[in-house]
Image (cartoon, rainbow, N blue to C red; front, side):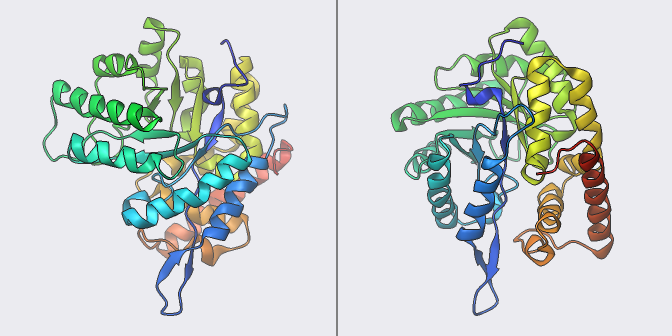
Length: 322
């Protein structure tokens, strides 16, 4: 694979968590200082080869995007944009809407707070849209992005409940839009990535599921967006370094070491699970359990802890702890 170290798409990027603190009334409010600090800590991390994360993904699925109000979301992104600027990386966030007009407004709004690239989910409609309607949805997002001076990244996540799948044929057409900087494909089946790359080796595709990072690289993905890498950044960056060099055996060693926790990235409660794992990692279990999402049961808490400990032990043996 031809690599380009100056291109953020050839790196792995952390999907950072949104941290909360209790207000005087006991309600949860965004802890901007804690969120910014942990984002900065991840961006400081280096892989064994000396490279770093190439972007900052904020207020996405792991950032509790769907639970935040629009005002909270924009305030959070404006705060994190300063972290992205400090480390000279693009700020990436997500958007989904029922209508193309609503989506265009969201894209324009995100641009005002420093977002450089918008991951665009398919329409949040009950009925499955036709490819023609889906294309019009993304086309208007591209027009809004051009006017705002940002780019978009169509986000295909067919494994997640509630999201319509984007057909391979439509992905081909969307990739040709000038404002599309990459495609993000989050699925444990990497055959779509391989099909697209065989047809067009110049496509830029980012993988979005930690369990298949190496397989996605073999299929042609140039980079990825990671949840587990936010917890273990040195390991995640090192794995991407090996993927880009085609050193598959070394990359696979790291993937296998993280398997116990990477599994959580493909589960419906991935945000709650991985955020708690991050809390354990920073000796702040209570903080890791502060979420606007679902509350974990004791059995789930014990499972996440066991998976985290196993991954940590395996990565320590490979000298990949930060």
